[in-house]
Image: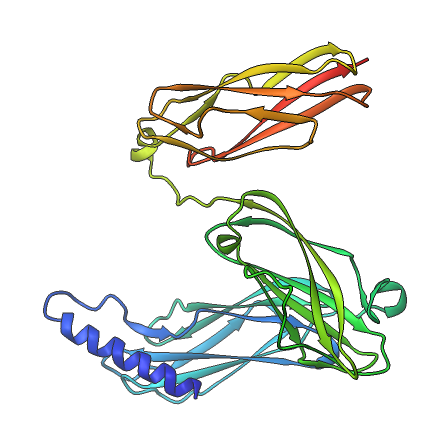
Length: 365
């Protein structure tokens, strides 16, 4: 089935190329790969080897053949036909991946040298090795519904709004029955997708939750927290809580040097403000001036403080070129003592510095 779909795509590609061939030469020649990168997801050593299939098209007017395939790790074994491949025909290269003893994310490079490209095409096999612990009971110490997890909260790290982030969460089924995900998940938010591998996790074996988090759908910036429940099926229905943490930043395409002076630019008068000595009962307010030094309108996407004790008021989130806006922040030190640091973080459409953080220092008596 996969081969048929690829063949259909190739046919459309060839037809489109023929239409344009009178006006320009074909840009792609040699071996045209269906995918240069395949992510095989979570790999657990107890489940044995994993296989990835790379398909390619001979986009030349003569026979093509593979001379040599080089991998950067003995864990990746390559199988391919050494016969010649006629023009416009599809070939197949198979990678068998043997999980390594160490865990973590991996990226293996495979260089395919052929008669049409002696220097080689670079392919990549990616995934996550999930190391098997010597003592599952102590390793998977967070118990939820008979399932053992390493952490109660899962940190996805830094995300950008141009693409989803994937996270592999491994667990151990300590129950005396197999479990599987319920097809109906009422609590999972729209920006999160969860898949379990394998689909059925037997008693006293491991599984993984492959979590896909889409910051575009989330439509937020800065530190975010998501808490929801996953519904499982076994002899009876049960649910477990899932907690996700992430920090989302807006993505901007790399800016050519010629355009550096053509974009909005956020200038903040003071990046560090020292309030000095203040009493714990004295509420303090200050003005922070924001300016758009760029030729295009500046939009403040979001403003975040790291404490409920720090509030702010701003008349507008849009600053025209060359204009200024005064933000008034208020700090209530009630219940605090000693040296104190608070922050105000600004997210804007300034592509050079889309995130800026102002530090507010004080010594509370």
